Image (cartoon, rainbow, N blue to C red; front, side):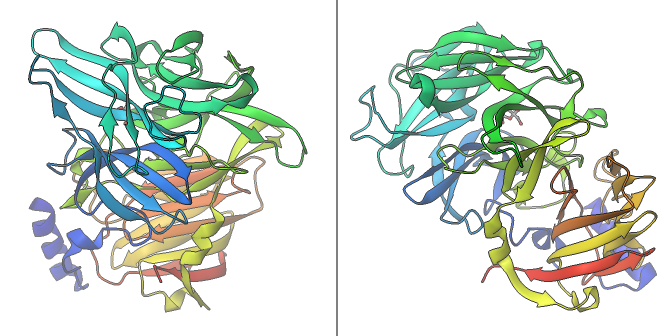
Length: 483
Ligand code: FRU
């Protein structure tokens, strides 16, 4: 309530029109959000029979974290999503009184059906963390399995769960993928408080044996969560690939926030090794976490992240829904003077959301748009600008930054009003940036995908505009929307 009293006062003082129904207006138009309630991590990303499946951590009963279950949405093009009924729900075991939440995990297209749980090959199998609360013994996390014979619409939990238990309170977030060279399934998951990723192998998804461990390494300022392990081609070096181990943990700006880091290295089917000596981060904004890549997609690797930060995730002022997912990002690797680095570009399907090409930012009356701008030192662009409100993106001292300190509602949490920045190497004379703005989220990509910054903002004024400063030059402007 206090935000609205504040905004009303602000609107009166500045005579700037206030948003009507601003809570619903924060809902992005082209980023996926569930119709109602809370969501966090993307889960079980998989492509099968012409459909991309997005499962997600979901609370069916409210707008804050709890009762974790798997929500479900499908898409044929990665950008238009249809929400389906809940896939896997929290449950109570009447015999023991245990309650089990369905934490993060994977789905695979189980093409060989060796365990014979499915009616026919190529059914979907989900491997998730069963987070069990037992009255007299506290918490336990182990890995369990469920399967679907109807393309993810309905699910059955495997009768002999769990399939992997090391008797720990924290042991979670399995990512399973097929490793064709050894004809086996590989699972990466974390022992969060020990900063370890464990790698297991299995022939049938039911029996798992430990192969190796990775960590502690890199940034260990916060517990590790949601690992993924995938192979990527190196740009401009035909035939050359490297493996990337990504995981969620601390933020590049320090452990007051969460963020994602990655390691570049090699995987021989048993062990992941990396010679990397410094932590590398996936995104430099405050709102990109728990990203994992789709299984079963040929010829490209696509990651989706949760746009939020645990530091304030339960408090963002969005009303009947809370949480969204990023633009799907195609990943690559590039050899730079500082070493091998991850690149990220919105998937090509994103361009189908461009409803109109505009000739200047002055025509922008919408809050969902895409903008390509060339920045020079000291220049930038104010987004969602109205009266004394704006979110600034600029280049200063060789750093790309987003300043959301004046972006609108910020006082719902004491650390939200932040400035994010990343040093661009080598120091650029000019920098082309691609901005995707969608009501309450801004994603910026630059330097051929070597850096990205993702931030949420909550503007309070209706019809804000875009304004350039310094000698920033607009290259392209598109309105975005669903056709
Ligand atoms: C990451 C995480 C996971 C866990 C899930 C619970 O955001 O904490 O480690 O499985 O969320 O919702």
